[in-house]
Image 1 (cartoon, one colour):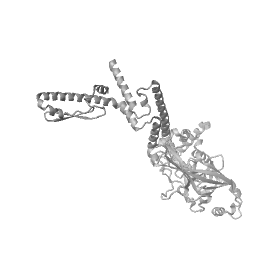
Image 2: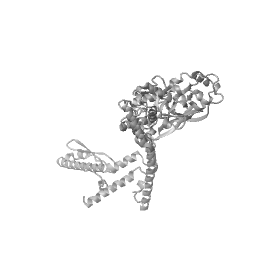
Image 3: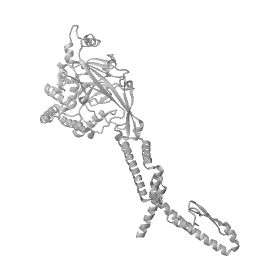
Image 4: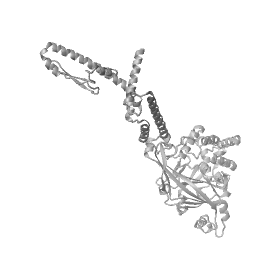
Length: 584
């Protein structure tokens, strides 16, 4: 491209820019190229325009950040949500004593495989099985590893499998009927015990009230098999409208203790959740009457959130977005347990008895407890990095408020609860059980503290329409822009030159056709002078007073025929108008 061509191109770009500023709907631009304006005026209007650009850009960026980072808004829908619509929480109770001494002796004598296994050795084995922390002890790492290896070799030599050891644990653990001296649900003792399940947890074998269905074919455990039974619900508050238990620890029958205190660990949780009592349970001391008033909080998400916001942004999962392999219903705790299980199966080639898993994957033998303990500890430290477990969008939280007093009180011996215990345990008249209750028994009440609970609603903070409206309002306030202004900018940037070139090309073609017709007309006049007047009368030429006429029709007579011509602008323009047109 020569220098003259470059100059001509620059002038053309300048003329396009000037025409855009003069005709654009964006505020302030027409003053920049206004004829006769001073340079100072132009500079001022340029600064004003740039200020509008900065203003609109800054606040549009703020709206974008708000829409991108927090697209949802959680608000309180009601503080009076009726709790009859919410399932009563599950209550899991674990005895600190994991193995009954008398039962363990009975099981050893009844099973010939354990004939030559000492009571002390089996007791040590069950300690590792009921608390993984013992296998992960940095200070006694070598000693524990030697013990685990020695146990594993001993059981392999006697053909004792991990399933056999679990059977020992299940039969020797304190059963629910052994621990519960009295059970009342809604002030009725029957059928309270039917709602209990004896299940494996991360804290050994425990009793769960109102738990969901549990099935593990490898362990031979199936609880809550009545699929038609709905989770228990209550229509009131106060301890009389809940669960009341009198629990016996039986200190004289202790064998494997999993704690530094005497008593129980209790967890109040959703019926669908895995009872991770070791991490979240609270202590229930002996000689105390404990009242657990539960506050319920529920949350739900609207359909718009599920459709328009991704799980990563809303930080929760809708029903059906993630299915678990070993659990029927999704919950965050179940997701964590499944993540633990899969990682243990991958690294240790086995799974502990209290985690659900594949039937093809066997239970961990004693030498593998070091491996699963390390995996368990690693997940605890790096949970979010290892497991992708978002909470469910529609969820229920049970928040216990705990208070307690000494037990038993002076009036307990005259209560209906004590009379039922007398009949059940065959306590003779005149026998004073006060000291035994103080040192071995605890009383527990679990109930709703209020009749209603808090319910949260999560909705869209900024939908697509709200976002566009906010951006449009800011652009209109700062620059006077609209949707049409955006189209104008695109037109002048990408299509204006193309259309101008088409206009010039069409004009040149029309001029060429007109010259040919004019020449033919003159030749016709020369050949037929008599028809001169008729020919002149038949020629219709449009006025060229303005440039605004878009289409003109030129009719010319040629051999008794009318020839219509269509063109974009008038052709018979004055020279100064033709010169002004030619620059486009």
